[in-house]
Structure formats: structure tokens, C-alpha cells
Length: 209
Image (cartoon, rainbow, N blue to C red; front, side):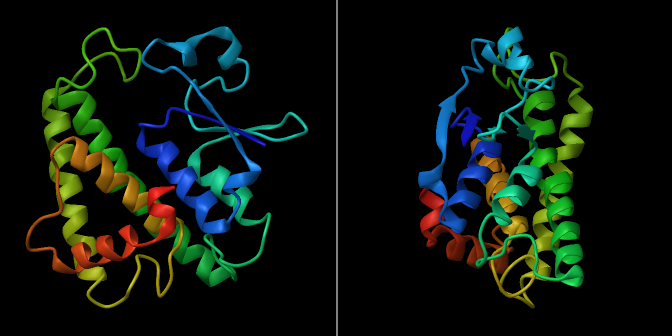
């Protein structure tokens, strides 16, 4: 299998963490896509993924799968434990719910702030929407901080975001917080439970994968 990525970005981080949690890293060839120079917008890459986004998984039979959650779902079903997406209908629904909340309200919100309310990667960058709505970006920063507070309250009652073990929801949150740090959006000092969770995640081998 091949994973096309740009290693410095948060979404490839999510896939690498999932692979490490599943013990599948050595079964994948990582191919770097030069996003700053627009390689993802060239016909050769767009033929693989019309959205031009990374990460992108290529299976041995030539099938292409994009979107972090879809890629993680595929890897999760290649082997048994640990399960990142749930063992039964109830678990799967809760994990999916929390993963989506974290993705929309933390990771995507921080990305919107970065591209709309900061200098981002510059006016000539090949990554991003190509326009800025400053007020929208600032509101998304507020949204991300509010989500950190919400997660802090949740983690006062359980060890991980979707229950008592690491799931895809935790991996998405790690990606969001990493991107937040890059944008100078850090975990609030008052969010002690979220900080403790983040410390637990940093101790996992997959964190440095």
C-alpha cells in the first residue's frame, strides 16, 4: 500500500498515528507530495484524487481512498485489536459522533482560522482557499477554544474522548491541537483534564510515529 502525504500537515499526522496504533506502519510506503510547489494540483495527482488533498491511500489493486476517517476505517478493519472505530453498533456510533465533533469544531475550525485570519502560507501559496474572510477566521478561533473547554469537561469523567480507550476521535484531537500549537492556539490553562489527556497521548509510541 502507498500513502501520499505532506508530512508537516495535521491530516497526514492522523493517518500515521492510526497506522502506528494498529501496528501497520511497516506495510505502507509513504510518498511525499510537494504541496508548497503545487504538485497536488497537477493532472497526474488529480487523476488519483480529484480533490487534490492529502493524505491519499493507494491499495495494491489500484483503488484510491481519500479522507482521513475513510483511510483509518480501512486500516482498522485490516486487523483486530486495538479497535479505533468501534467493536459494536453503539461503540461505532459514539466514536463516529465524537470524531465528527472534534474534526468540525477543533481541527477544521483551527484550519479556518489559519487560512482566513493569519498570514497563513502567504498570498501565493498553493495550499488554502485562495481568499480570506477575517471575521470568519476569528470566529473559528473562538469555536476551537470553546471545543477545548467542552473536551475538558468531558475528560473530567473519562480517560479518552470516546470512552475508556484511544480511538480515532483522540487521534483527530491530537491533530487539531498540534495544528493549534502551530497557530498559537494552545490548550487553555484552566483545561487541566484536557492537558492530562494530552500528556497521556504524548506518551504513546504512535505520537512520535
